[in-house]
Image 1 (cartoon, one colour):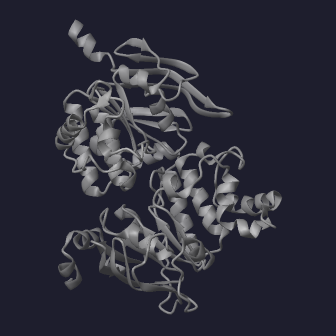
Image 2: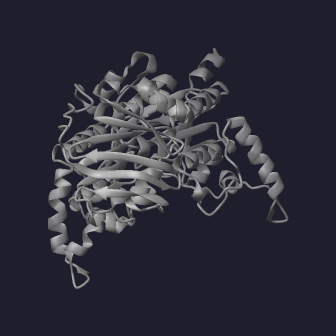
Image 3: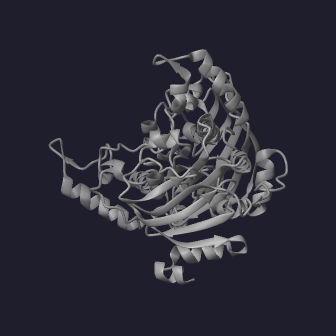
Length: 508
């Protein structure tokens, strides 16, 4: 009987926890029980309170009310270090690596093997190699972390959590930056950790991932608990209904392909750049052109070369009027080619500045007189665009870091609109946003095309490519190996081209 009661004691229990940030109620009387050795998922729209709940558990923020129990005993944390000492580690949604340090140094940060105050480099390397081999991650430990792509940096975050002695791991969007094979590998790691008795709190926007991995699912909406139920009793549709508070009738807006005589807005011929091995394609007004492929296939590298963010080695990019697009980001923007970058954290937003300032950033020359920004004109010019993009915040003067991920992404779209572009390159535009924000972004992309813009859509989510693109280019090893149109567009055709050898894909 005693053993049975012990099994019923939750590893983690939160009782009527509340948290406010100013006037915003992030959490209101939320109660949660997480069983030892289970995978417990939190789902909800951006701003629902999922990350805040995870941060309270990890000691990043303190609750305003409520209680926390660990194995039935009261607990409270003033810092992540205290949480770690209690056996709780966290993998944050926004990467928190030290970019100047190596991968191994990041993984064992503050836990490096030392002798006489000096780091024992050989032993550090050996510890890292053992950990990486156990996890199945092929990442060299001596590479500077800041040089890695977001997908590789996410792996380093996971390794850092695994390197701790924690038996509770909070994972906030751990697979958002991973390719499908890498995500599947991560899923196996999560299952292995749970089988070994570790407890996983999984925060994810990928509902298929949640249903595949979780034992239990908790739905939050507007900071309140909607329900907690066994994952086997849920479906994607039931979770979306609970998250949104309304039924979801259609994920993607209807496709309206441009006419065959639609004018070209961008022509690319034999473009070569780091990671790009001779790309050629056209983009028409009103067209959403999907760019698919595995992580590392060269999609982002192609986008950066188009706008001149990376050096073009040869080839050319031509605009609708026949003029060549300069190999310079500022000149490209002035010519009407705008880009939403893959990482809003690293390349997109200035988090300490206001929403208004982030939107107007690329249009300051039109908002300034004698080098001084006219603040009233700036506010007037940005307000209508922010309203159009449905950016939700308590005040447009608030720092952009106070916004949810979905609203931060909308700020990037608002900045694009400020420049009145003819071409929009959207690199992973829905990464790290909830299903509600995704729907808004999908509608926005379709609206851009319907207003005559050409849209180049880069996405690792096949559903987005299938649901939005009028035509699809598939890249592999820096080359465009397949072009799919109309009924040719399918997940099987895209994956076949992405995994096949270039010669075979081209022959198909």
